[in-house]
Length: 117
Image 1 (cartoon, helix red, strand yellow):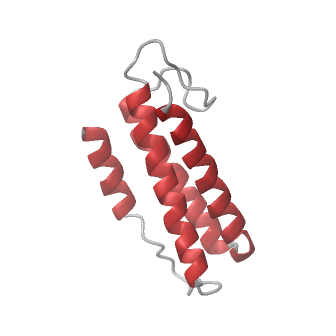
Image 2: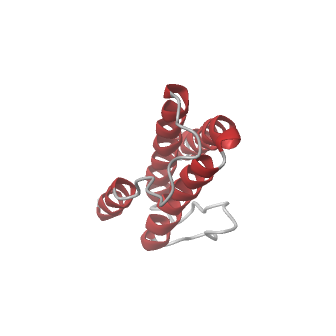
Image 3: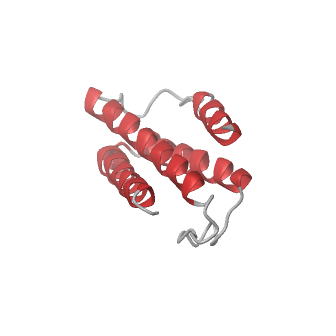
C-alpha cells in the first residue's frame, strides 16, 4: 500500500510546467493518450509489485533487474511517466505514437503480470 501511495503522490506533483509556453497546445485526443499512458504505467507498476511478492517470479526489465525493491519500483514507474509526458510535451509529433504506444505496452505487461500464478 505504501508503494501505491508514493506512486500516486509522485504522479500528482508532475504537472507540465515550463518557463516557455507550450510548443503546441494539446488536443483532446492527445490528453486522452496521456491519461491512457499514465493509467497503463500505473497498472504495470501495481501488477509488477504484486507479482514480485512471489519469490519464484522475477522481473524481465533490464533496468530494474530480476528482483527490484518496492523503492526501486516507486522511483522507476513515475520516472517513466514523467519522461514520456515530458518528451510528448516538447515533441508534439511524438505525442500520440509515444503515449498510446508506451501505454499499450504497459497495459500488455500488466495483463501478463496479472496472469502469473
